[in-house]
Length: 246
Image 1 (tube, rainbow, N blue to C red):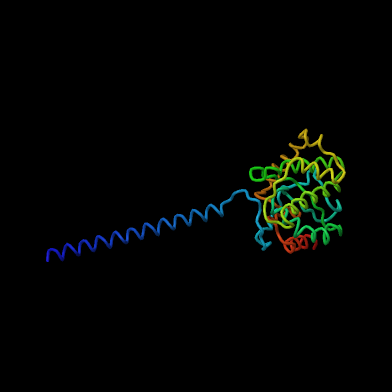
Image 2 (image 1 turned 90 degrees about the vertical axis):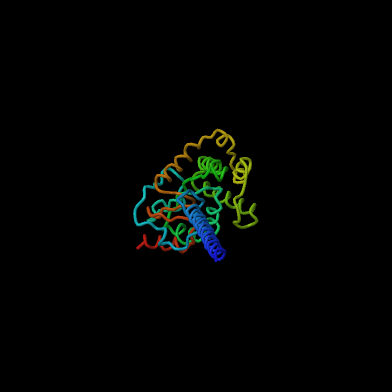
């Protein structure tokens, strides 16, 4: 009888230990899941995300982004202004250039409905050549004006696509010599301008202005002051632009 009671007590203790172990394991798993969720969804600077629903990204409030003195593509009197904050080494920015920009240019920029203003937002902590690429582009702009700025803009993204196997799969590494060569291919020797760091502060001003306007990642666009974030498909831009043209 005594042994039976002891056995029951041991069995009860064992069940409690098992239940405690299961509860502790479940609690630990829950903490890990919550922690992972907070890490991956937290508000931190990123290289941009593809977001297909424009309702999630077009803000109804006017932001403080301005044209400044940056390169303009299109009719300067166009009724819609798109200010793009971008990073020349960012694969999402190159994805926008590869997949969306051609249609945007053909349908809206070339027809005089939209002007595009490119402003620099180099995320140097993860894209170490972004600052240099922006400075090189400014050197080309100084030598050849806005039109040749955009030729060099296209050249840099195009050369990275070539290095990336013809598509956008990864962040591409390149050098200062590459930047100079790509400019040389367009007829410009930017060595003196580039090596002097002449436009370092200009690029940093764009970065500061973008941060003040609410830019948290690249690419980011302001369509007549309304924020459109990420490497959006053309349909998202069409929705935002057509709403401004009504």
